[in-house]
Length: 116
Length: 115
Image 1 (spheres, rainbow over the protein chains, first blue to last red):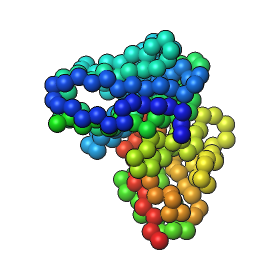
Image 2 (cartoon, rainbow over the protein chains, first blue to last red):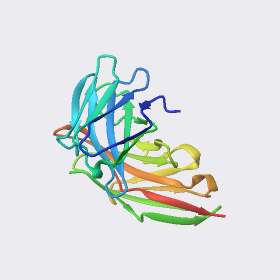
Image 3 (tube, one colour):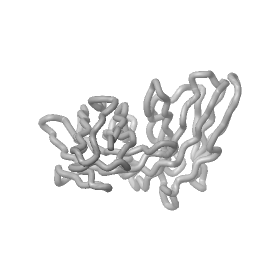
């Protein structure tokens, strides 16, 4: 158990819909990262937040957005869903005292999103 | 721009044989390098990391990796494979770019262990 929790574990929805994925980092970790894992794209870094502020951005679509709340949990919002958005979405956290992610990242179990 | 190349999407070894998973990276600044393992239906777990100092890094479950700057490589090895090592392995590089620290993962190598 990494200490990172993600809900829900599975999510099935239809094209055009909007969903919210939730992540609670390990106790004390300030940085949260979101990743998308699919068979054709592999593991893609989406975005990083550090203590409530966006710190780094990867291959995140404009239809996707994220935020980190004062209690440090994070949410990833996916809108206007397409079939190709079906994937595993991982959240990871690290202590990242300086905001840098060279620290070890602890991954949650993931949310499997299926868009029908 | 940083990148990671893992040679071989699938590697198959016999139980007790040497495991060698290859990783080459590119980075414009001194990188931080990682190996993660992903077991079925689970998230990624850190095996080992190189940040600074000794170039031979030992990790969990008997794995180790050597940072070779001249070869821009960070290959993962284990002297003797166990059935429980069957999983997917990801090499990752992290460095500080204009947008802050970013971690790029390789495409992954699935390790099969034959009895």
